[in-house]
Image (tube, rainbow, N blue to C red; front, top):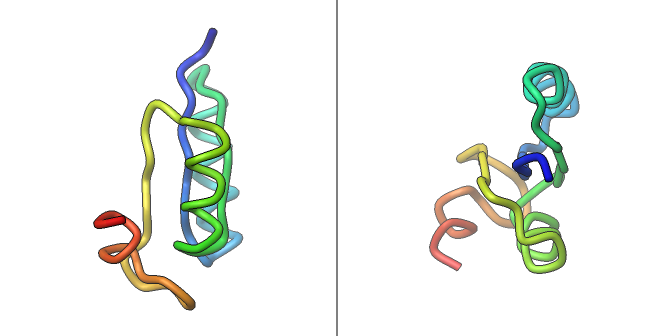
Length: 67
């Protein structure tokens, strides 16, 4: 099974670029649009690594990381 990465970022362009690069390197990539979505997806998917933006609506990256 390939390592999985959850990318949490409100920018669709950033998510797409990160997904392109990581998938090309053999990772499975999942994305979330903000911290609230990220918490739900992290609980559901149990990714190996999470990459998060710091400034997002609804829940910022620092609050997301703390939770």
